[in-house]
Image 1: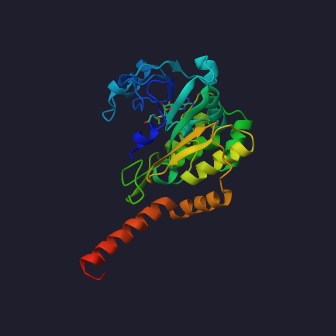
Image 2: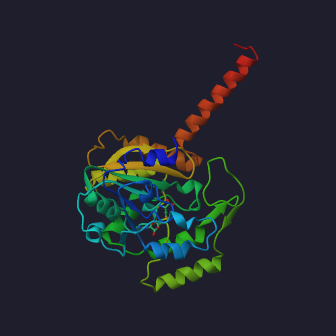
Image 3: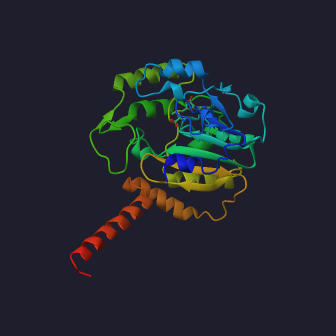
Length: 298
Ligand SMILES: C[S@@+](CC[C@H](N)C(=O)[O-])C[C@H]1O[C@@H](n2cnc3c(N)ncnc32)[C@H](O)[C@@H]1O
């Protein structure tokens, strides 16, 4: 299954949907007939202007933005409630200043059986590789303190550590190569100093997850009564991203916290997800068995 197959698995093209932050890379484009509305940080013209000199971007993929988000709740922005059957947010949640508010804002817009469909970077295999995994405390504190800007700690940590590996900013598990910081120390310091005295939003990745740590945080937030949505489906193909589907209809009773804690520990320690290790192990066993059969050992 490829990323688009999974992201569109719960999408009914004809039913009202919302894509948050599609920018130049929509998953369910209007041009392909999806009954979709778009929230982004700037309008279509603003996005075209932003990307028109970027050779890696096809600005023809940028679509009409229905709602320009300026920090208000999505309910206030769209004037809608329990309306959308599906919401897609690909590589958006890690940018949010208040993770819990984002989930709850989306929940407010979803119908009872609606699905929130997320693509999330795995920090181990992207430019967040040298950062610390996000724990529950930071997520809850950002919500209690009603963060609308990234904390100055996030700005410092992100800009000091954002980095590439073998020239890439996102990669597969087995990719290796030279690690390089994307900002010099003085550039990162300059950004930090100016952010200290600014009330302007400065973009950064606030949250760093692996598939299991993300699942655990979602489960804990639900059981603490901070969110209503729980995990309906997930897909972790390995590499620099994973996918979750959240819904109000599902329950999270079957979650084994200890299992998720141990999986998270393994993922962080190995730098490789246990599911990837299992798949690799099975592939390795199959190829050895095939080779032995060819050599008539069996
Ligand atoms: C990294 S881009 C992802 C673009 C595209 N979805 C993709 O997967 O390649 C993040 C996008 O989310 C938008 N964004 C970030 N935080 C947001 C928020 N809280 N609400 C709405 N949009 C947001 C940004 O403006 C940007 O367009």
